[in-house]
Length: 168
Image (tube, rainbow, N blue to C red):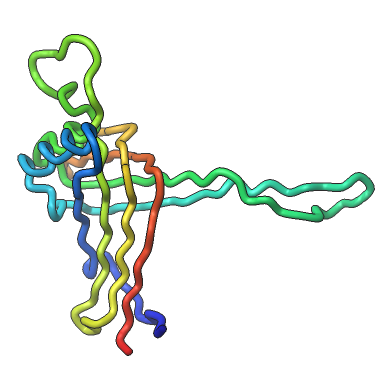
């Protein structure tokens, strides 16, 4: 298998959303379709962070750990975009972002986020990172005096996968 050795910039990337499974996925599908979020427009940044709770085991009388044990894995990240509509807030709150205020509890949409990187200079090389079963946990809107209106959302997800394709 050949590895991808080319670099990418944000200019080479696109962000797409796809509905997840079950009732949460159905709620996300409605928002994704109504706001046309495949691909996500006006995105200015996206980040994905994966952390593994690595725990060292220390024996009595030794200063260095004798073993490292991998633990829980957390997938988190952010999306920044020029505010155009309530798409990201609706993906966070579902019916909770509607007027009038919903009575009782409401479902939070769950979806998959795909970051696709491909350069026109090397069309047979690409990297695709997919974050599965994502839920937004914070949303922020910035309304500056003399700059673009921006929204930011942070998320947590269940798992992540990457597929690299390189020319043979």
